[in-house]
Length: 246
Image (cartoon, rainbow, N blue to C red; front, side, top):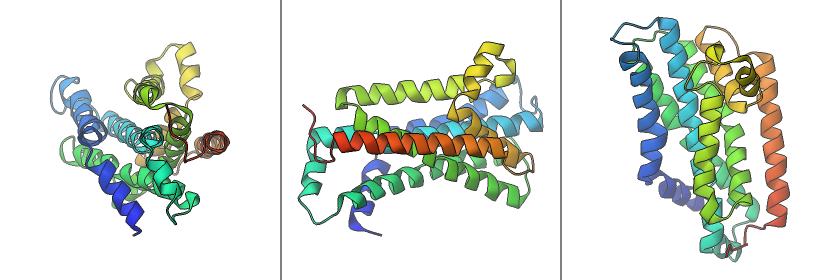
């Protein structure tokens, strides 16, 4: 483990807001939507409990991926990236570390919400399905790491925090993570199908149902990830890592 990677990981991991909004909150929502909102323990079907669990796993991972990478805007403003520029660390390594930290920090909410689903709501999956579910959603979180990098490079420090909250809320609410897409009006269903969060959760639901991720969902996610990455690179070239906001 490189010193820069260890430093960045500790830096983000010590953030209490990360622990609250990306780990504790999705776990609490899982219990609320299945136990409280359903009226009583056992008042929701296994299928619905599993679907809720997957949605909250996706919600937590998206928040973690965005939160871990959008901080680039703060690093530019503070001069941290300019300081790294004068060290022997290559800029490509700095970016690689940010990507690795974002992907790694998406894992805790996936595991915690899965544990809540299993031991609080009694969701039962085969061992292979549990591993596949966490693995698929962990891999898919790279799409939102790329989105976070794009936002972090494109936005100034004062706008980044609010933008992250807005983007995460839109992806969750309109992507069907808080309310099933099936009850959306037809217009909102079309909006949901145009968002990466819908297809991200779709891959998890497919695995939780005992199958493989739908190829269409995988292709759409790959397209979103590639688009976000290309745009992030284009913005970074115009706003170098050494740039300092303000």
